[in-house]
Length: 432
Image 1 (spheres, rainbow, N blue to C red):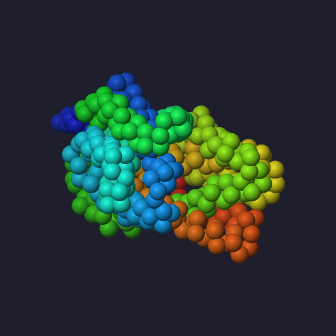
Image 2 (image 1 turned 30 degrees about the vertical axis):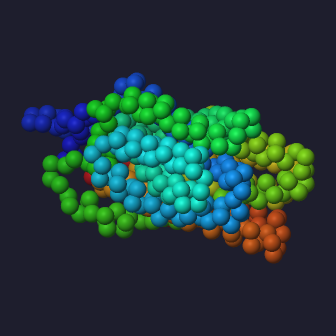
Image 3 (image 1 turned 180 degrees about the vertical axis):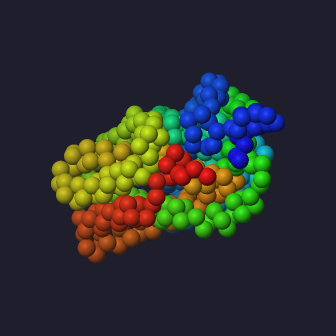
């Protein structure tokens, strides 16, 4: 019999008590405090603000500091490699942590220190160290947020909670891009990193509003407390042999392989066709998906609980394939922004479904956050190869062929999900 642990860590299944509900049953849904829910909302919002400063602004800033493109590229490559290699170790750290809030807080502090390094000493050794620290801290933050979310609401409420997470992350990204763009334009490019440091304060304040006793430590790690422990269920090898995890990681690799190069390729097309309108059109192509994500992510989370994960995964891949085909077919640069509606749909689906599906597969293994690292590594590999592959095809066969090729990869990912990926919604599993 599975014993359910309440948010304060006490068991419901004691002597003479009725058995607790199995994960995935409607009776297992908890109602955490409003303070913790809102604290997590604003933590994600401000964290997105903090992370935005490390996007394209790094290249702009280092260029103003007279760095060569080779030096800038080397720094970005080092950061990307650390981000890729650190996914699974980051998950292990969160799984082993006694307090996910402490891990998240330390990671935010390290990101603020790295931003300060960029602003104060833009010399090669310091910037490389800052890039490494930022990438490593980011590898821990993603699993920590998912762990806190799962620990607060439990497996039955995680779908809707992840939808809220995606909404606030999208709003934070959009607001921060506007704020930092304005600071970079009206002040200096260095000010972007000082704003990042300043934003760490409200981020940590929001984190402090999450009550520690609202986070179930067992559920945060994907652990099921049992009267008769099953050592085999919690072995790492058992998790890594799970077919749904392997298939899903392959699907996410295909997703990023198809998706990562689409916007950069499209930006090049827009610039060549309408150079005067290019900045505004590219900005619109970024803002439109963020708006769709903010509006639709909670609905995606609720639908995932009602209709299951698999139909939404298929819809996300279908939207990505359609987007690639439309980029190949549309010749009016102004209409390309409208095509980005499909990017918003894909982003909303996978922003919620990736951590949700991992939670489904890994719950009960005690290695939920490591499983996130496995899927994150697959995503990083796909994204890393995508731009190089698409650039090669575009140079040798044309941009239209590159778009069609990326759409074909998305279609292949759709086939993988349809043919091999089972439904993972807990209610769909047979009773134990």
